[in-house]
Length: 79
Image (cartoon, rainbow, N blue to C red; front, top):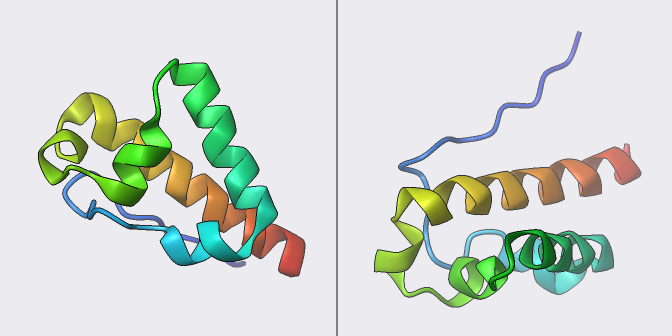
């Protein structure tokens, strides 16, 4: 059995997931979908900050989910 664990609230940093975002089209697509569903640019907050906005629970939770799902999607395609 295999497992993939992702971090929770408190582990967020501005720029998290940026290497995946810069290197995989599927990640860009997922970030755009998150922006569209939330009706605001969570991708900008994730990638550029400001940090105080990223630390707000209403942004932290979807940000961590977006980055985690993006990483999972890349791994799923690669494995």
